[in-house]
Image (cartoon, rainbow, N blue to C red):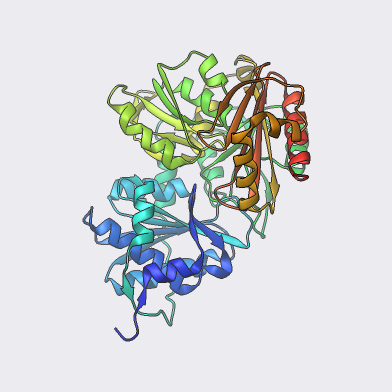
Length: 475
C-alpha cells in the first residue's frame, strides 16, 4: 500500500458517530473514504466472529445513497469480497434475506432524518449489530488504499421478492378481499413492493402521493400536513386503512378507516396480541396501555433504540417461547419464530413495517380498525420535537431536570403538579400525580429534542407537549 489510510483515523476525523439506528451524519461528511473506512472496519469485526464470502447492500431513495453504496462496494473489492446489491428496498427486506443467507449486510439509509443527512446501518449474519459491535467498529484500525474510482451498480431483485413472499405465503389470496387500502408512497424505500403485497392478498389498492423528492416522514411525530392528508384521503376514497412507512421502510404509519393515524406503540400492542406473544421488550417511551392490558406474561422496559430491545430478547427466550418487541415509532421486532395461520413465521429481530400492518388488517374483520383501538385501555400518547436544537443544550436541560425535577417542571409550565415517579432509563420521564406522563429526550440521530406526553385524553397529551416544547425554547 502507498500512503494507506487508517479506518479509525478517518472515522474519528469525520465526526460521524453511532446513534440509535446506525452511523448518521451530514451527507457532506460521508465522503468516499469515510464510507470505505466504516465498511472495512465493519467487515474486520464480522470476520472475527463469522465466516462469509459475500456482503449484501441496499439503499433508500435519498439522492446521496447510490454514491455511498458505490463507495462501500469499492471498499469491499479491496478485501476480495463480493457484494450483492439489492437496490432500493426496505431495511427489513435486506436484513431478512441476509439472515437467511448468513451474510453480513449494510443498509445505506438515514431513515426519517432530512435529506441533507444519511447513514449506514450494519447487520451481522444473525441480525442487527450490538452496541459492543458499534464500539468495535469505531476502534478497528484497518489500513486501506484511497478510492479513486467507483463501480457501476448491478441490482438483484431477490431481496424484494423474498420479502413479499415472507408474508404472502402465510395467507391465501382472499385475506384482504373487500378491503380498500391507500398506500401513501412518498419516497419510501418499499413503495414499489407494497401494492403487489397487499394486492396479492386480495385488497383493492389506491396509491397516494409518490414523490420524486425525498420526504423525511417521521412516524413518531406525524406532521399536521400528513394528518390532514389522511383525513381527506379516507373520505375521498372510502378507505379501510392507509399504509405508509418512514424513509427506509422499517417503521409503519397506519391510519384507520376514519383517516386517524395510529400511534406506533398502539399498533405494536395490537399486533402482539394477535400473535399471542408471551414476553415483550419495549422502550420506556411506549404507552403504559401495554401493561394495563394484561395481555402478556412479561414486559421488559428498555432504553430507546432497537439495539436495546434486541439485547433483551436473548434473556427473554430463556423463559418464554414467543418473544417480540416494538417501539413508539411503530417498528416491530420479532424475536422468535411464531406460528401464524398454521405456518411458521421466522424471527426477524429488526424493525419491520409490514408485519404489524398485516396482522392488524388480518384481525380487523368488518368492524374497522378504530373499534380495536377503542377496546384498549384509555391511555393515549402524543409526541413532537424541537428541530435544530443542539444536543449539548438538550443534555444540559435534562441534567438540570434530573438534579431537580420540580424546578424543571416549573420552567416548563407545570408548577402546579406533584411528581409521582421519575424514570431516567433514557432521558427524563416524569409521572405526575394524576398519572399523566411527560418525557424529554434528545434524539439519537439528529439535533432535536423530543417530548412525549401520555394521558387519558389526547387533547391533554397534546397540550402538555406543546406547552413543554414552547417553554423549553426559552430555557
